[in-house]
Image 1 (spheres, rainbow, N blue to C red):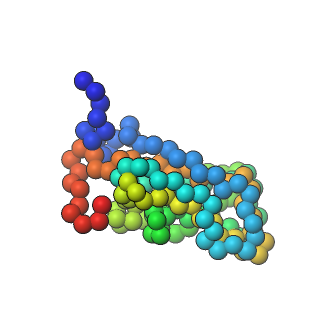
Image 2 (cartoon, rainbow, N blue to C red):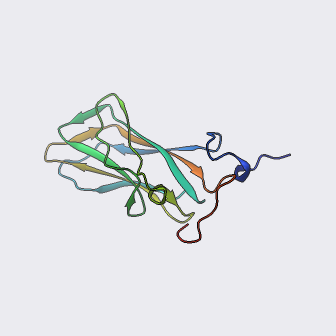
Length: 139
């Protein structure tokens, strides 16, 4: 018998997929500059977001969106050499996307802000999974 992701528990982690999206080295004085975008190709929910960078100078932040809607409660402020977790939006609608929607990574820096060797890891899972109802509107 084959395992079907729609039969997996929504609270389980077996169906999670990690997408690594590079930021690289940033420019100073940027506002919500898109640096990467990916379309998973299935209805999904973002379940975890982390940012890592080898260096951070002055003020810099990273945001993760589904289309034009942020999936976080606020931008993530990376610190050099550390993994910094984002806080997901409380609204499930803000964390869920259709098969045709993209996950977008943006960064913002002030006049001297720089992120070096930055990357964002976004964990997603298929939606709906076992026991979850597909909403009538939206997804």
